[in-house]
Image (cartoon, rainbow, N blue to C red; front, side, top):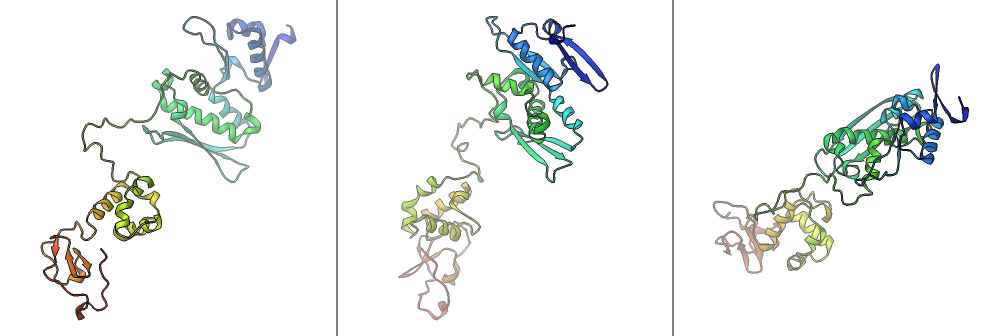
Amino acid sequence: MDKDKALAVVNDETSLQITTEEVKKYIAKDATDKELFMFMGICKSYNLNPFKKEIHFVKYKSKDGINKDASIIVGYETYLKRAEATGKLDGWRCWIEGAGTAEERAIVEIHRKDRAHPLVWEAYRSEFDKGQSTWKAMPIFMLKKVCIAQGFRLAFPEDLGGLPYTFEEHDFINATKEPTKKGFQGKKPPVKTTQQDSTPPPDAPVTVAQIRSLKPMFKAVGAESDPDILQYFKDHVSPDIESLQTIKYSQFSSMVQHLKNPRGSEKEEEECCKNAVNCDYSGWTDAGAYCGKNEQPCPYDVSLTDKDNEGQEDIPL
């Protein structure tokens, strides 16, 4: 056997000799001389056995029958075997979060015996699922395999760095060469056919630009700057609001209703409280009390100079 044309794959106590001709005949039939040289070189450098499915030679054909570029690929199990062989692997787990949404991702957590903290790595489905048939058939399994391969390369760079990518990662690389393909984008929102459908959910975020669009109304109540507007939200909607960027649609909607009628509240009561200073519906003016509920002067008007009002705070307009 010509040693220059033979590949020696050592597995524990045995050594398997594989010739270039055998690889060309049984594994890489469509390989060019250059591709065959690269495949044999990677097998030899990393001691990978193609007959044990540790490494694969893949070459697809286009629709018109022309051979595309070859891909040299390893199975994700190869990463696991190599990591185990180091004696440093101290357990790992992989799981899915955000299933069915645009944030769907696989997360792998890998522990090493010689490190105090685990490596945690995420792979988002929207970045790798480009609509290939295998992703349509088993998306969760495919996403986990991508995440596992990437995570183990990062956790064991000295042992796995430089190894070829997995099938799943090559699917992504090949798909990015075809921009017309549409992959996973998460659940699409329902078609908005009615006014009710177009209403955002209560916890939907509101942009600062939307809030600033109400500046004329805020100006009318003396809140002109962003800090003033934030304080106004705290005073009239919720004291827990931390910034304009954290305001939700329900809070924004409440503020809109308040600004339309800053003198009163939407709270319903059967009758107006006789103590006008503490009435939820009154807004003090120079002339006395204004009833926001009845849109007219309060029938129990109490002057700001009355003794009963001493020590009470005015209710702002």
